[in-house]
Length: 71
Image (cartoon, rainbow, N blue to C red; front, side):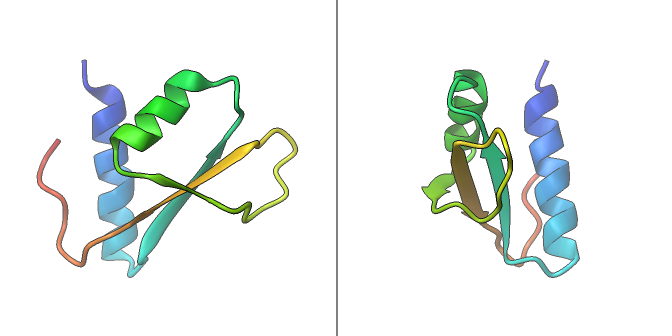
C-alpha cells in the first residue's frame, strides 16, 4: 500500500520545510522490519543520541534543502 513510504515522505518534507538538516530515528534490534525500512530509505546507523529505554539502534538521514518528490 505504500503507507510507510508516504509517512517517511511527509516526515522528511515537514522536517526540511522547518529547517532541519537531518532526521534521526531509533528502534529496538528485534524490530528487523523497521531496521530494513530505515536502511531502505537511506538512513545510516549513528551513535546513540538519546537514552530511550528500548532503543538498541539509532539512525540518521541528511535532508536536502529541496523537498523530496512525491512518494
